[in-house]
Each structure stands twice: as C-alpha cells, then as structure tokens.
Image 1 (cartoon, chains in turn red, cyan):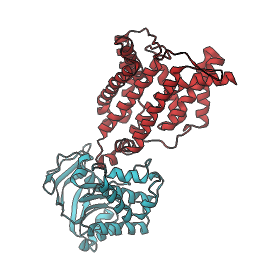
Image 2 (tube, one colour):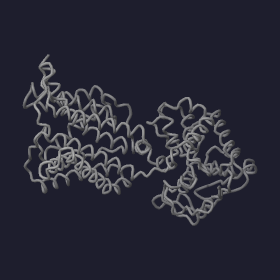
Image 3 (cartoon, chains in turn orange, brown):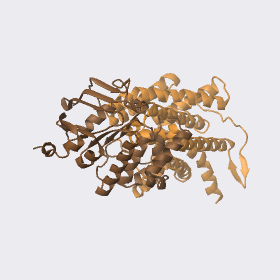
Image 4 (spheres, one colour):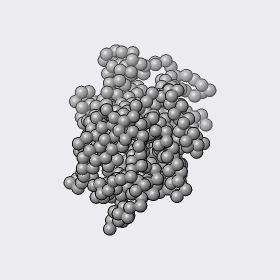
Length: 289
Length: 237
C-alpha cells in the first residue's frame, strides 16, 4: 500500500506536465481542428528558454518562466503566420507544415544550445515533506499547483469569454464563424499562441524534474499526445485525466519493468484506446474537411 | 438607417467554369427579394459571392451609402448584413445560447445584447427552452431557427437566407414562412435564395429566376407564381 501510494505520488508531477502538454494539443485541436505536430518541439524551446533565463541570466525561477512563456507564445504566433497560407489552400498541408516546422525548431535548438543537455536545479530546495510516511517533494507540489491554476484559467477563458467561444466556433464552422464577424486567422493565431505558452509552461516546469536536452520535447510530446488521446482529443478535462493517468502509469512501469517501462506504458495505452477509441471524455470529433 | 442593396454585374468562376454571370439585382430598404431556380443554377454562389465568402468579380456592390465591394466577409455583418448559410452551419458543439451570443460577436456584449436575445427567444420560444443544450442535439427545424436567430443577433438591416426550407417538413416550412413575414413586417430587408418556389413567392414581393448562372426572368412574385415559364425553367425543359 505504502509503495503503491508512493509510486502514484511519484507519477503525479510528471503527469501534470504531460497534462499541460496535452492541453496545448487539445486547445489547438479544439479551436482549429488541427493537430500541431510541432508542439513537442515547442516544449523543448520553452524548456531551454526557461532554463537559460533561470541559469544564465539568473532571473528568479518564476520570472524566468514568465519570460519564457511570453517568448514561446510569440514563436507560436510566428508558426501560425507562416503556416496560414497553407490553411487556406488545404488543411492537410497545414498539418504537414507543423511537422516541418517541428524539424526546423529541432535544428535551431541544436544550433543555439548544442546537442548536449543541461541539468536544472530545483528552485525550491527545501527537503521533501513527510506525510504519514510518504515522501512528497516540495517542487512536485509547486508543479501540481501551477498546472491546476493554468487549467482553471484555460477553462474559464474557453467557457466564459467571448474570444474563447469564438475560437471554438471557428473549429466547428469556419464559414459561419466568418459570417458572424470572427477573424478566423486571428483566432487561429491566438490558439497557437496559447498552445505555445502552455508548451513553455510544461517545458519550464519539467526542467528541474528531467534533464533538458534536444530530445526532451520528443519524449514529452509523444506522452502528451498519448495523454490527449487517452482523455479524448480536444477535451480539456480529458487532457488532465489523460496526463495524470500516463504519468502514474509511467511511474508504475518504471518501478516494475525498468528498461521496458516505455514499452509497457504504450502497450497499456494501446489496449485502452482499442477498447475505447474516443478516449475517456471523447464525445465528438471536429471535422474540417 | 437602412439602405438599398445594389448588385451589378456579379460574376463567380469555379476553376474556369462560371457559376454566375453578370448578375444584377437590387433589394430596396424593407423589401424582400427572392432568388429561385433549379439545383445548380447558381443561387447559393450568388449569395456567397455577395457575402464575399467565395472569390467573385462585381461591378457595383453597395448597401445604402457604403461600397461593399472591398469589404471582407467577416466585416459584412458590421455593415448590417446578416447571413443564414445553407444547411444551417450552427456551432454544433456549443450550447444554443452561446450560438446566439456569437451571432452578436461583432457587437459589444451588453444589456442591449440581452434585449436582442430575449427578442430572438420571443420569436423562437423553442430555443429558449433549449438554451443550455448543445446546438448539435437540436432537430433540423430547431437548428434552422437557431441559424436564423443567430443572424438576427447582429441586428442586421438586411438578412441573406440560403435555403432555409431545406430538409424541413411542410409544417416547419410554414413556420419559417411565418417568421420571414414577421421579420419583413418589422422592416427587415430580405434576400431569400430558395428551391422552394411556393415559399419564396409567398415571402417576397419580387423574384429573380436564375438559370445557368444568369437571370432568366424577373418580376413581381405574385405574377411569377402563375407564369408557366417559371415551371419550365425549374424543370430544365
């Protein structure tokens, strides 16, 4: 029991990071009907930017994160702007365009920061909290709290604001959205910007948990993508549940299968998706043909 | 302020094939004009081209004092033109009320929006009952009402309607007609594109009969409904 609980706790903080990555995938999908395959690479950019501002510029961690989120958000705007001509011609081209942009980002990351990685020390160096014999790292709690706040803000934005409703309307019907006066391009740009901001948040938070390297985004991207699918692609609660589930699953398989842990994680994932292809909260599919 | 919509020499090409050729017509303030014709005659293209949703060439496109020829589709609503697309095109995954509020996207959401919303609910009481339901869960007739209600939320002076009767039962077509007549009585200008000639003749004062993208006949709706040539054009004889 003790071990099980400790394993769950160990998986929750990474799970929260997967959830943030999944949120970025789902937001762009929900508002554009597009899977942004550059998302994982944007996570890496965010992780490098945050760690650079934190380690080299010696900004406080929170400030470094905010600056990294801002800069990465701008990169999201650039991606949308570059891909926009493709969207008007063929939506599938835009999909492929995101893959291409991901490759470009990958190359840029290696050119700027090199192929080797860096370790980021925890910004909260206090010792783990002992709760009924369970050890909880303070930083894990910080990650969880920040992920929770980001999720609540995103949900409020989508459900309570005019812009949030308009962005969802764009994905559901391009033409009708245009007819009521919504600037589709601007809506898509906003979606990409918020998605990139979420990627930077995930990348910045994961720095002290994992090693920041060019391969980081690939690993987080695929886990976050799996999390989004597991929860139901496009669903906000689904992204959270999917992220935490993959994180905890990861933690269990790491304990039991060591080197084969990834394999087991994705096997379990595959079986669940075969049983329930729409994911936990998947209720509808957006079709932008 | 209301104005007359003037369309002159409207042309639409789809990859070399012209769907609409040199079409000209007017919708006077407070008037209702119908565009009827067989399937593929260019009715929907005409409406979409006026809205700017598809590439077009147009000699004159004016609404009142405003030149609309360079106005993008998303800004048409800001010049008082509401659009009800063919096949409803509601925002299926959003609640009914969000759909309606998005109709007022181009305006500030304030107390006036609330008043407009109440007016739309008064016109379509069924939408008030369903306000929290997802729009995609509504029946075809309800979705059509939602599409009209959404367009009304922008408080347009001119409403463009594309086949509002499509796929509806005769009773529901009757309901739509009643709504159109009421909107006319309230001073709204209408441009109605329809396959259903009977509905169109009853809802409008004058009509264009289009054939192969060109105007084949025009005249008062009352006169056209008894004209045997209309039937001939319709059946493509």
